[in-house]
Length: 113
Image 1 (cartoon, rainbow, N blue to C red):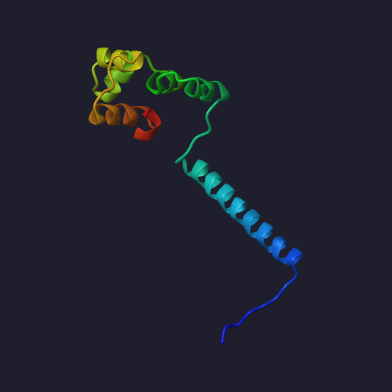
Image 2: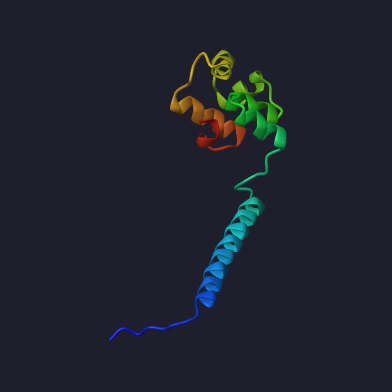
């Protein structure tokens, strides 16, 4: 025998809404914890606008970190000319190169993609 419960539709809808609100609160708490741990960071509006507009992520992140191409080259071990080529869109860079750049910038490889 299946155990069933019958409740009015309004109560059922209220339970669904409460569940959705609880999921939102949990997502918020996870995001705030990631910020507190330093796993995530908030980005300024102008930086997001540049990325959304299609500007090369490597340039945007490098400038956001306040680094010159030369300083990024020194920190990452990637040739400065190669960095300039990636920023200009003349080259894409290998996965290993992009990983080195991402590590030097303190971001994930996905942030450069």
